[in-house]
Length: 185
Length: 185
Image 1 (cartoon, chains in turn green, cyan):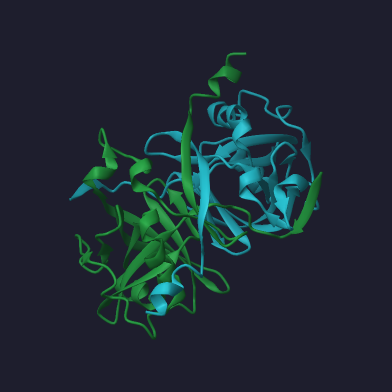
Image 2 (cartoon, rainbow over the protein chains, first blue to last red):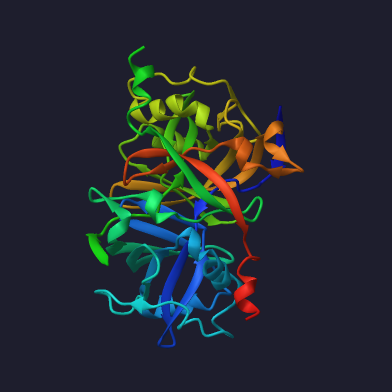
């Protein structure tokens, strides 16, 4: 039987990211899991307008999207608990810059995507920043035959329903493949 | 060591959804995993402009986002393999309508979100449809103490890197909680 939940967002789990931006000349990081894929080359971040990081993204027109591993869950959660307004998070990770020069990336994260802000979609309480990915950096040990290996990355998945962080399970089927059985019927 | 991958989208895994829309008066379904959360009440879908479903979403201004379970992986993949242009998918699932009347939802999916189109963000090859969630329907057995239980839902996670479908693993930490240890240091 179907139960009505009201207008409840159930698009979970989503990948938990650490977004990096320079704010007032210093790296700052914020935890964001309300993300999305806009097209193959671009990513969206939904960021409450009250956040400290938004001004830095607007000022520089750049940001980074870093994928933390399960073993970074404390640091990841911490970045969502404390604001850069009151707490200097610039020394929390080892950072590096890429070709955009102003998007600080987190070396400890297995994957880093360096983004140029191409659009901001305005919502009542959120800036949805859309970034074009300019370069992607991956830890060598997270590549298997040149392909990003999620077993090695160990991403942190987030669900709002239960306010939980989840691990990724096993790969069990191939896309654009397993459904062919029905096609051939 | 970091390896440069070029401008590669690595925001995976994402939840695999079946998007429902009426096209030419009949229910049609398409598999979309390039989704996102725009704010607490709205969802984005990145849909290649070549898809059959786009016209139906534009015409009716409504669509549904259905979360299939792992045991529906064949049907889910199939909906991404064949186009409604050539194949009638209207009988593939049992459907029902909600208050919007024109957004067909899939009874077999444990979660259904009924959406009103509120914005379309134009990308060169994609329509990014933003839907406001109007009502959410959940199978009774997927609720534990009134909360959506992802263990019961068994969502299908998608990664483009390896073109794989993945299962969800275990919950291992609580958000806005586990990071407090660092705060108190």
